[in-house]
Amino acid sequence: MDAVLYNKLCNILDQYDFEGSVKEIKPITIGHINDTFVVEYDVDGKTVKYLLQWINHNVFKKPVEVMENVVGVTEHIKKKIAEAGGDTEREVLTVFRTSSGENYVKTEDGGHWRVYNFVDDSYSLDGVNSKEDFKMAAIAFGNFQKQLADYPIETLKDTIPNFHNTVSRFNDFKIALEENKSGRKDEATEEIEFVLAREKDCSVLTGMLESGELPLRVTHNDTKLNNVLFDKTTNKPLCVVDLDTVMPGSSLYDFGDSIRFGANTGAEDEKDLSKISLDLDLFKAYVEGYLESAGDSLTENEIEYLPFASKLLTFECGMRFLGDFLNGDVYFKTEYPEHNLVRARTQFKLVADIEAKFSEMQSIVSQVKSRV
Ligand code: GN1
Ligand code: MG
Image (tube, rainbow, N blue to C red; front, side, top):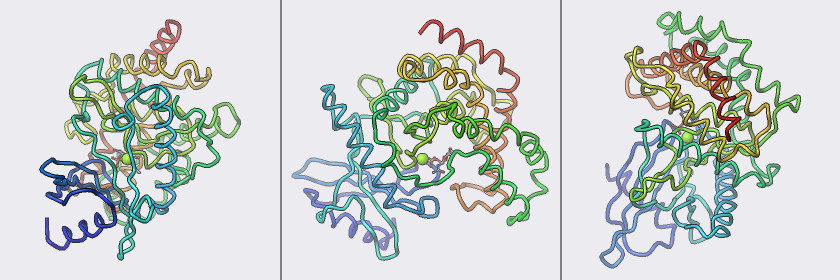
């Protein structure tokens, strides 16, 4: 790491009353949005780790409100864990406060930074190793939703308005297509057709939320498998992380996004499309875990639309990747020029496979529902 960055990070850390002295700062790659560093402190010969993160303000235009949501939600969950006699250090994240009591540090360049505890002896999964893992992730997200069921939703800030409003995402896509800022529209003709042919799907869930057919809940909105931390010793889920997008939404957003990422037989950016499909066994495992943990609080519609949400959230994400490709890769971090196009293709391949397996998915949901 260059000295300028290192000094900047040390200046940020100086605003906290942490014991000991900084020993090492290492950048780590997690997610497509924020910049993250693991900081090691030496405290009388013992190492204590923290997670230091820059909140990407191109994505999170209101970082202070993001932090209000994160602190509100983590404190709420912490109380529940304490009541249940759980481990409040490991089963939920802690946001540290600066010496002056703020939950973030604002730097001269206008950046917002925050420090979390580093949950030691834990790991996250970029891909599913077994059905059991995936079922456990479902239980973790199901419990997360339950823990927040009595959270005062009216106090939660809508930090990225219309985040999972697929109609609004479709409109953004059409603007990206019209503007074609990257000049790469002709490289994605088939993918563009794929999106335009599915406009009518976009309004299904937003319509049901508006009419009251679906309830508004506190949702995570970014329920990728790698946002669950597992315990290295027990291999059980410990806690749900990446709380920046916690906002009012539909439980179906969380379910659908989990399937998009975790029940795909390939990676989100797999180039070989023959490796991409929906694994029905994994879908079933997730439905089981989710209905076992959160099922009794879900409405009939929230259960019936699980297969549709899997398709819609995959479609929406693909459309966002493709839109970013057309805009010139200004939103998601990319490692090579076609990265967003590759990601969009995997999502659309998965959508097509979900469409082909839709009735099987519906039968799985009915079967599991009747057993739980
Ligand atoms: C982004 O940064 P990360 O990886 O947690 C994105 C999600 C997408 C996801 C696709 C704030 O999440 O919405 O589903 O990439 N987060 C934001 O991998 O846009
Ligand atoms: Mg995220």
